[in-house]
Amino acid sequence: MGLAWKVTVTVILFALAAAAAVVLIVSLLGTPPTVDFTSQSPGAPINVSLQTVGSFGTGSHPTWVSYLVESPQGQWVHTTVFQVPQHTRVNVTIYQYDSGSPLRNQQLGQVTGTAANAATINGKAFRVIDSNSGNGIAHTFSIPALGINVPLYGNNANANLCGAAPCTSSSPHKVIRFSFTTPGPGNYRWQCFVPCGLGFLFGNGGPMSTLGYMGGFMKVVA
Amino acid sequence: MSDATAPAGAAPTSAGETPPDVPQDRAHHWWRLIAIWVVLCAILDPLYWFLAGPHIPPGTMTDTAQGAQFDFNVLLVIALPVLLGVWIYLVYALVTWRASRGGPDPVAGPFSRGHLGIQVGWILITSVVVLFLAGFGTYELVQPGGAGGGEGTSPIWTPTSKTILPIQVIGQQWKFTYRYPTFGGFETNQLVLPNDTTIEFNVTSLDVIHSFWAYQLGVKADANPDYNNVAYATTQQLGSFTVRCAELCGIWHGAMYNNGVVVSKDQFAAWARLTAVRLHKNTQLLPPYALTYTPDANGADGSYYPDTVDPYSHAEQYGATQPKGGG
Image (cartoon, rainbow over all chains, first blue to last red; front, side, top):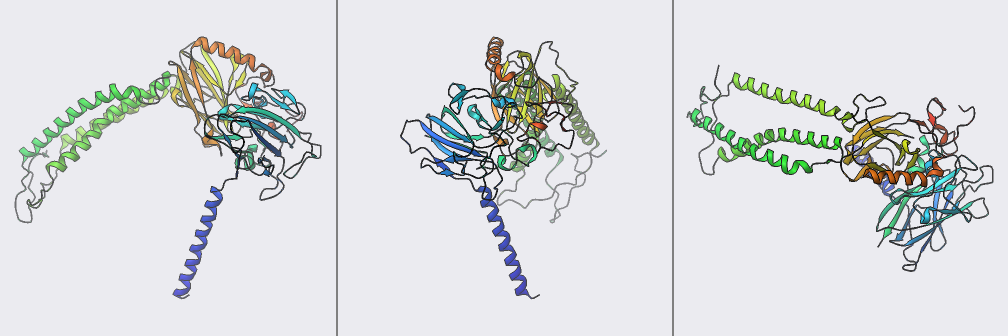
């Protein structure tokens, strides 16, 4: 092999390695989009709608469970990052389309950190759900730094559940509502505490460990 | 016996001159170095001990934290003279023996020779320091009551207090919760401790390995699934402290922290009573208090969890009803 060939091969291999490194870094640094709720009327309560789906249905991980956020324009966005103003009441509505199971830790079966430490499910107030009865708990919406935890009651696993996001009200679902007041500026981690990463050790891999699926950030800005 | 301070054969220079470093000069340098070293040590060691020492982390919130602070201060007071010895010699050499601009070329000194007294003295001093630190460190590592470290299921070093408050620390991806078995077994996100009380932390996990690190309490114990890791500390100061997970445990490991607080005994009793009432409904749904729990069957949709190893095992399940005839 002549010198020209050696140089050419070396340059090509180096270029490929560099490209692979760039792709890897970009993919690792990539974050899901942020849904911005700060443009709503100043001082007025913010309405944030989320939905949970048992399998997202498309993309690189179609079988993964996921949250979605509805933008102020009414579009469902595959993300778990949303931005809200500081010291503002946030009214959360979660459309829960997944089935449930007993909790690994029933401590997560109680509502904490919300207004009056309460939430409603299909319009009925509740503070605690016994995850061992009925359909169990599908997911939780929890912001640990704020002490917020809301268990999301599951749907009957034998029903014809929605299998691809975004789900519509024609599929079996529960509607959970609660409110809280945002603190000062900062990025607040929120996540589901039900180990719902099907097929992963302890259920906490995959969608439980990937931004945009079962955990994300609530960005509070001034 | 040769003498390191004796001329012992001056090294000839390229010009055939005798080095200027005569024994009297060398003894003079040694005494000057020792004097500077003694004076600086006599000033800086007490200054550190009395001014900086009381503020060294992790503080004095518990006896174990105070023990850690004391150990660090002792080690630093011993290490400071060694550090000063090196620095003083370096600075002295730079100032005294540097080649001056425009001066004569540097010349070699006399040959180095062994000195039995110095050799024996060096070995003796360093041996005494190292052996003292080994004994001191070993003793401090186990007192009081295990020095705040996890001692496993059957602690060897236990506190002398007869009234001990047990608190269970439960690690899970990705937060800590706390059970108070002597107050009905309620489980909460808050870690509230009474002052002037010996605490027995029973640390376990519901999934992977975590580590309960209550920094200002001087307590650090691994949280392993199916294992009760016991650590002790006696509170002696009011205030808040930080709890962090100190074992890389997944994506939200860095966010796995919260704050605890040490309050007066009266405040603690009031808080415990109120919390027991407030959480009563959910406490009834928790499994009976146990030192470890097997969460195998309790994941979402149950059976994806690796059930091949003792799936519904000896340990008490946590939070969910075990399937009948499971396994």
